Image (cartoon, rainbow, N blue to C red; front, side, top):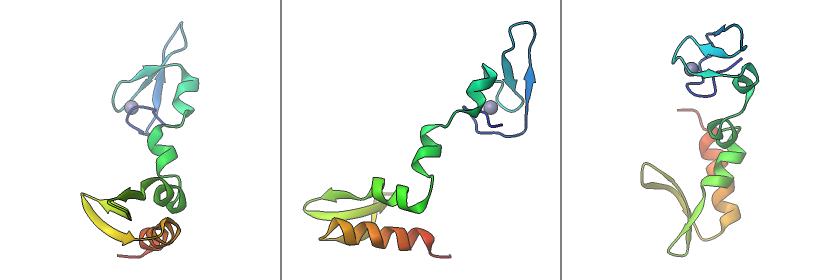
Length: 93
Ligand SMILES: [Zn+2]
């Protein structure tokens, strides 16, 4: 069970009588079902393929994968840029 606001998995307090749950960490209050919901963050970083596909964008005719305003990858072909971005994300540091 994950808090949809702070993503904490530490737990929640169930309140009576309305059944709402409160996050231990950030005190977010919501329906218990809401604590299972995916956030945009969960969708964006689901795996390197999804992240690379979504982050590669065209800048002055070149396909770039940017991080902190630095073009880590810059290619003429979108497919190549995405493939290289996936490899980059999987690289050990
Ligand atoms: Zn929370």
